Every structure is written in structure tokens, then in C-alpha cells.
Image (tube, rainbow over all chains, first blue to last red; front, side, top):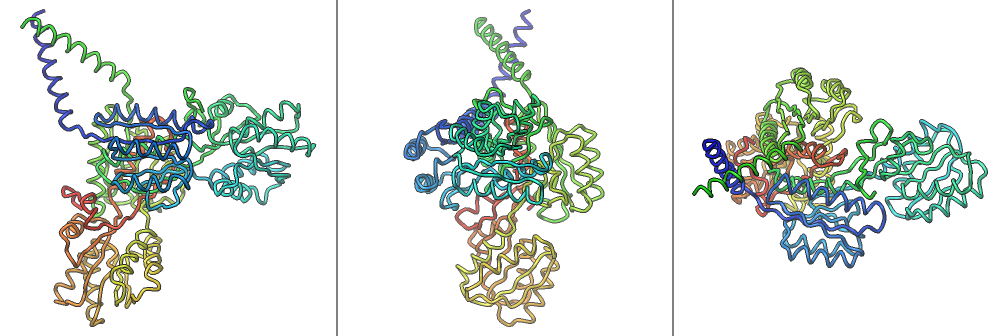
Length: 316
Length: 316
């Protein structure tokens, strides 16, 4: 018994020694993460993935501190950047509210020698960023269109657009290119601002106007939910499928469950914030510079691969 | 004293408990890394960074095993992929010898459900890869040309090309676009196969042919070394600067030291293999899929930032 205690004491000393050895090599890095508050489902997903990545990486790298700050507006985010700078951050990972208000403030952070990673929404001056992580909007449209071409093959569809932006045009243009030459005809397309409520109203109009619609490209999961509700209330049974996009958990769950109205989804992951934080951490702990542009793919989510994109704990 | 021993014993139990807790959560992932053997300086750098990243990441993630395999030919690399597959790898990070010989074998690995990250040299079928990490060749040429335009401003230069490939064309085309409208005249350009010896011979010809050369775009660090040796042997003092590219440590050291003949370098980092391995590891430990294309920047390396790109322990 005494021997056992002595052995354990020796083990304690040895383990304490190992712990000190690790501590001596420890590199201290602080990364600020500035993201919009949860103004819609997708940004709620961004916050979830930022917090999750913070926990995972702080565990893997003792000495790493990740500070996640959310802001309800562009002006608030500019202030948040000043606060983060005062906490002496080595790097900033920022998903800007918008380019107009944030280009100046992020530029100021950069001038202090901070490593800057920009996510999703680009700044007006690309020279500010060290790393840019973004979704692939042309691919998002192309993959969606290709699915219609391969599976619906022929029929009449309606299309919901987001907010008039470059992102929206890249998606819709590539969708239309992808269905060209098929038997698919676009009856109508209208802006619904990536909003559930607006999409509900736009879809009501479409349903009143067109007596036969074979399928809907809702182009976004929030809009898809509005569209599905409008169809349900109208008790229409002509519509075979509604394709959204982003990877919202409720929609991915429908794909997993084999829901015929929602057979697939197209990824535009809020988890791109996780990739951005990981790459930024690799810059400091990986031993080599990582400057570059990371374009996150928009693959088709089918029943086969859907589990990989399903985050039941996420709000999105 | 007895109390102290007891406390230490208690601590040992506690620490053992924590260790068990960590072990229980430990995720076992095996990543195979297949790269060419060191056939020239750059690939030697790739091996250095692969081994370094293996050590860093295996320390950060207990349960992670990174197997680095080098192969002296395309056929040997195809065999190496079979060996790695038999070791039940979860992911493959591959810098293919060439697209022709490796597209099939990497496709076979993919068919087994392995996550595939391709580095630098693309495969003939892009649908095989989950992640693609590559250098930015148009930027490499543009940044080099911009430096000539901003600093030499006017004068006669000669250009050395690599091997006739898309990579070489993208570099040279963008270099020429960047110097357009300046007072810089390209006297001549010849292929020297990214080889030190070939560049030495090509430069000897240039020196015999042109009595006044103001600067050389060697476009690669191995070629720059051949060019510098030819100038030294010819005892010519008209040439003001020789600009290579890649980030070879001897050349970066010259930039750090303020060598006027080698004032800058342009990055095309063998460390892109490190980024590729890190991103692949993030796919398994980061909790979110990372599929996409990562284009590594080719920034100008100047005396100000050169230390960040200097790896004295690397063979390259």
C-alpha cells in the first residue's frame, strides 16, 4: 500500500513535470472573432459554429484565446472592433455586416499589424485581408440548376430571388445556365429578400397566377419554409418539389428522412466561420503562413451524405 | 510529509482521471500524405513542411496519425497510394507527380470513401477532390511584373520561362500584362525548365547576345541561382537585379540581408502542403465540413516581411 502511494506520488511528480514542459513551450495567441448578431437563422448558425470552434481549438492549443463578439449593426460592429483591438488581439476574423461601414474600421485594425481574415461578405479594399473565406455562389446556382435538369427534366417552375446583389445574380445566372437546353421553363421569378415572410407572400402570388407549377427553386432555406407554408395553406398538390439551400438543420433533416417535397439541399454553410478560425489558428500554430482565398464548396446534400451536414444542436 | 504524499497521491488519481477522460473523448484519425521525393529544391521543402506539420498536429490532436510517404516517380506514387489505403487512412493529402498517371489511382482511393485533398498539381477529374489547395500563378506573374514596373520603371530585361505548361503561361502572361505601359522592354524570353543548369546556359546565351541588360526576371529561385552564377562568371556589371520566386531560404536570406541584386522575392510556398494537411485535419477535428478550393497567395517578399517566410531549418 505504502509502495503504491509512493509510486503514485512519483507519477504525480512526473506528470507535473510533463505539464511544466508543455507550459514552457506554450505559445500565447489571442484571436478576436467579430460577427453579426443573430438577425436571421443563418447568422445564428454562424454564432453556434464560432463558439463551437472556440471550444475545440482552445482545447487543442493551450495558450490560444478566442474572443467571440456579436454586434447588432454595422456601427456596433465598428465599435466592437475597437474593443477587440484594446484587448491586444493577434488576429481578427470578421464577417462584416456590410462592406460600406466596415471597410474603414477593419482597415484600422490591419494597420496595427493584426492578421485579418474576412469571411463571406468582402470588403471594398481586398488588400486589407490576409485570408478571405467565402461561399461559392456561382456553384450554388449551378448545382441547384443541375439537380432540376437531371431530376425534374421537364416542367414549369417558379424561382424566388434574394436581395438584388452580386451574390444573388451569380446564383440565378448560373442556375439559368445550368437548366438551359432542358425541358424546364421558368414561369416567373421575383425577389423575396431571403425572408420567410416575403417568400410566403411571393409564393401566394405565384399560386394565384399559375394554375400548374411543377417545382419551385426557393434558392434559400428560409424562403423555402415560406414557400412550403404557402403551398400547404393553398392545398395545392401539383408542386412536386421545393429546393432551398444553405444547409438549415430542419431542411437537412427532411432530406435525411426522405421527404419527397424536399429531396435535396445545397450547402452554403454558416460553418465557414469555423473554417476561417481554423485557418487563422493554423497561421500561428502551423508554422507556415496561410495567406490566400478559400472558396467553400456548395455541394448537393442528398440522403447519402446529409448526415455529414446535420448539426442538431445548432439553432440553424 | 505524510499529508503531502497523500495530497500528491490524490493529485495523481485526479490527473489520471482527467487523462482517462481525455482518452475517452479521443478521436482516432489517420491521414496519409503522398508527395514526390525531393527531385528539386521545392519538393524538398514540401517534405520538410509535411514532416513539421505532422509533428505539430499530432501533438495538438492525440489520436491523430499522419503518415508521410515520398515517391520518386508517378508509378511509384500510384503504388504508395495502394499501401496507404491498406493502412486504412481516413483522408489522403496528395501532391500528384503528374495528372496523367495519378488521376486514376487517386480516384480509386476516393471510391473507398476516403476524404481527398489535392495539392498544387490538379487531377484531370476535379470531382475526385474534396479540397484543392494550390498556388496562385496569375498573381505570381502579376506581383513580379508590378515590382519591375514600380522599381525598374524603364530598361531592358530578359525573361526565363519554366516548362511549357499552363502554370508557366499564366505566370508569364500576367507578368507581361503588369509591365505593359511602362518603359520596360523584354529583349528576349526562353524556356529553362525551372532548372538551375538550364538557366545557367540560357543566361550565358543572353549575355553573349545582349551587351546591355538592366534586369532579369528569372521567375523561379532555382533558375535565379543559375542566372546569378552566369552573371558572376561573365563579370558583367550592367545587370541591376535578378528576381526569382518561390521563397527559397537562400534567396529570402538575401532579401533579409538587403542584397541589392536580389531585393525581393515572390512567394510560391512549399508550405502549401502544411496548409493542406491542416485543413484536412480541421475537417475531422473542427466539427464542420471544409470542402472547397484554397488558393494560396503569392505576396511580394520584401525586407520588411521576409522573416515571416524564412525557414532556416528547411532544405529549401
